[in-house]
Length: 301
Image 1 (cartoon, rainbow, N blue to C red):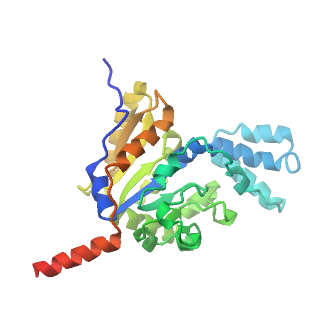
Image 2 (tube, one colour):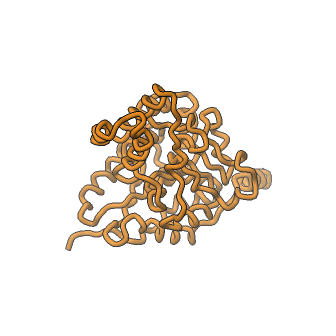
Image 3 (spheres, rainbow, N blue to C red):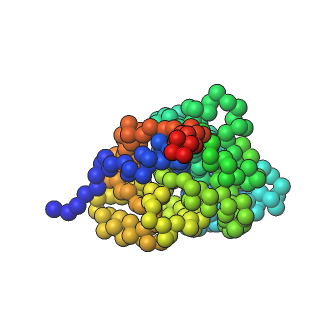
């Protein structure tokens, strides 16, 4: 009998310890937002092209651009046309969701940790932050993506910008290249991987390239500590692929790949896993942990 994925994989002890010590960062990708109804990369590119049709390009031109396999190239072309014709694409409208298809964010937003995301949408809205002005906990301009934001529970850091400010959004191929060689982003990622334990959610096979951009900021290759965990969905028939990818992430980035089956309820399986993991997590503010350490040191002296 061939091996199958566990529908309820156990939470790694490292994540439990990180939550208890105020050191957990949950990193959210497009796969989570798609469960709610946000567009895939291809759907996003098509929606942008729709806004250029028929005033800027005709339907035949749209069809030709839409046939390009790489959505980032399509978005790059759209961005060039936007600038050339001095128009404004309404990105916010594309990510506006009237009726969410899933309530997965209810569980995610109950996590008392720091969040980082490559998503442009504003679906991450932690319960512990809602009583404060949004500008105090949601950050998306490059100059605001600073290391100290990772030390504040309830912070939401949009690594690729946010729909509230289209100028902040990392969309085109050029945007990505410039973004990930910038000193600010390099310092931010290096600090995150050195000092935090990171759980990646919503990064499927479609987002591997984006995930690798991020993981290249890690300097933990020789570390014995396991500080990066990636929850990713596979069909049971893809067990061989999972095993190869698991070894790849382990050898290349010192990251642990955790597989779950898509055979039953597809990516919605993540909702059940997150709900189960929540029962195992107890969160402590980083400030309280530091205070307790200081008291312990004083008592030992």
